[in-house]
Length: 393
Image: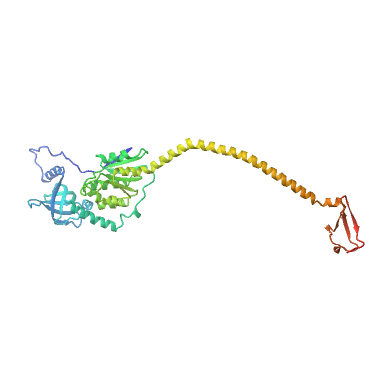
């Protein structure tokens, strides 16, 4: 079941106010500027140019810069707010060729016309690769890509947070390859293309911080370095580093792996691979369950019959063994009885011998007797006492 949380905030205003004619109406200056700005808000555009001047406003941190056309026939003043500038992950300086995404604006206090930038990105693979390599080196030096700091994906994932575009094949590939194991899926629809997607992605990740999920999944298809700019954003990398649950990133890529994927707790190459990673522990558990079921239904009865047969065989063996032991014991007892009979002192007494004792001790040597001792004489039948009158050696 896929539960949409909300759509990430996309500034796709297509204002219709003020389009109707205002013939005959008299506007105040501020009122008219406000009307123009409503119209301008709908004129979002991407503008190519070269930075000619750049200044960071000290108190606010907002950046004021001027971009010019290569032909030298056009110039625009631009403003990018501090938070947006930080999210762009770029350092603006004179001579840098950029593409600015934004809309026109008139500042009522001065009547100054400016472009309010929502994103700024360097132009060309060379500039993007240079920025990518520099940021990668910086983050590597901080140890942000090391395996030791990465969290382990739970063995049996139940609740999944997903960030991707609701449109296109990516989300369908992910859902179609995810097993039918009762997963609960929360989806935030986000732009995933180009530098402008960074704001959406950041907002979506921050939203999921308050959600009860087992893992966070960020996915999109492959693309050029330019299209993957948002996934090479420093703020996004730092946002997932300390995310409360493991983050899995599945972004199709070619030679340059996105920095977001390198920082993720698990990195795989495609959305389908993410689904397979989540499936694997459940697949193993169900396979083991099937093996146990087969064993219980098929092998256990066989084992019961086998053990029963062994017990029956053992019963006959025990009976035979007991009879053998009994016979051997009888023979030993008979032998012992005969031995006792042969060595029975009464047998000697029957032949006329006697046993002489003094004070309960048998006398075998006359040296232990003295004249006048009283001794007991034991015969085969009966006994008597006698006094020693004379001793012969």
